Image 1 (cartoon, rainbow over the protein chains, first blue to last red):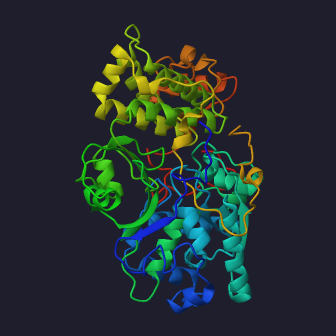
Image 2: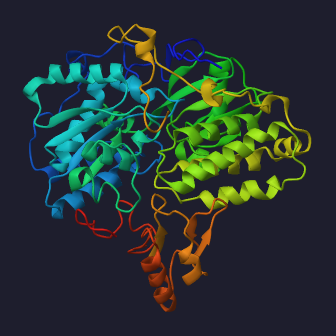
Image 3: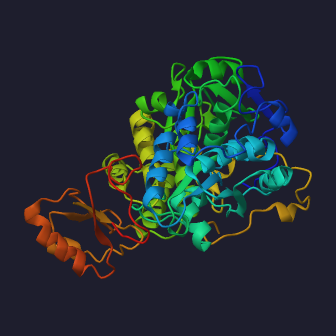
Length: 455
Length: 84
């Protein structure tokens, strides 16, 4: 299947703020870049002048509404304040000053929310970045972003700020690969130019960019930090961005109240509450689970049901979409788009992708019922990054929620699972933002730059 | 002390299985994984031999209890360049 990434049904042209006001992450003017004056008129950049000590600023940040409960929005859902404090503690004894990084690489093909924020709300992200930089006494910060239009928007925003900021902000062109946004890959790219993960420990809060303790925060996390600092702020993390796609509907970027039952979102998005869907949740990372109407859309809520909300994306699969085929498509993506540096990851992703791809034909003689769970168990926690964990989670949710489907495949095959030679299987699992005016219009120039990891 | 096989280094030589069979296994693709993450004192000698015999030095000790290398725990951060 040849995919034009800008064609419907992949290009996202709609946003929807659940609360119906413009005080959240999406902003007042969707798909139009907010200027510094507009953002300042909403109360932004209140802390541009660095008054008091870094420790005072850190306590002020910690005291902002909801900060203590804010979880990172890059996918791992780590408590943001805990991470900030860990860098502050490391910086107290380190020889180099700490560094802060706004991570907007967004390698997940089913998520566009980070690019959206950087393109259209760059000041919200920069305010968050400058706030945490000031709280840590960092003099240098990075915005790490792959999307060209997002990079232009951030540069324009920085030009508007001029010399009014005390932090030097570098805009770094990230590689457009799946693994480039993993936090050790971010640190490695900023230090050496090579955007591939390193084994942990140490983590970036211990040893980061050029050895300095480094805070890597997702751009939506930083936007939440900035929102919590605005006048009359609601608690940080009260809403989150969700890229919703699939089910034959145009994709839409939602800002949802944290904890909203999935059924309410389905009613809005599809016009009906239907229990017959599955959902590929959290990019390619959170598993393939039934779209339970009572699924609580929060990190805790999704984890309780065996999945992961991750970066907040939801790709709906309408019956009769075969969950085994979708799992095979995702693992095929991982087999092609892993970092290409860990033997166990390259071998296992290729092996599992090939196995799942075979399930279109009956395989009564092979003990897949034993192999698939064993592989899921063998991959957990093994990788330098979390690609093996993603494959393990996908297999686990597939076996747990769709055991009859798997059994039926082994016994009788599946017409949907037949593989077409040369088909990039994951081509349908994609959401893009529309091209902006300053992007090249030559089709050839829009094609992703081949990289060692992807091609 | 905990044990970790660096997935970027392991090439599946399987020497670790020969010298510390109870602590390592191979996955279905032939790469080593640590079976026992928290190593008992009496096994440290065998595991140390596995670490030293690994042709690509893929095995290492990680200091502290599980979770010590995640942010926000009591363990002090490593100095730049320090391998833990």
